[in-house]
Length: 56
Image 1 (tube, rainbow, N blue to C red):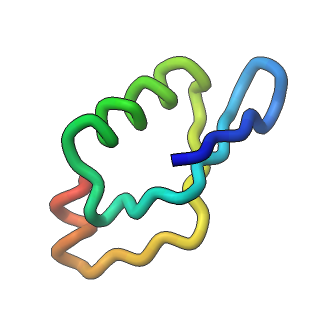
Image 2 (image 1 turned 60 degrees about the vertical axis):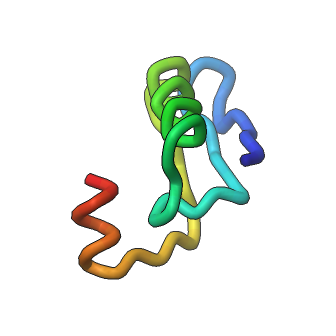
């Protein structure tokens, strides 16, 4: 997982992570990023309907 701040005090772009199959420590890290930056952007994600429900 690669992160890059979007602005000095708000937002982060997250790359090299597939949210549809993320679990455990990866999800914990994502939650922490959202908590610290307020907004997290994940580009080019693909979810089946079932994966989307499971992630939500």
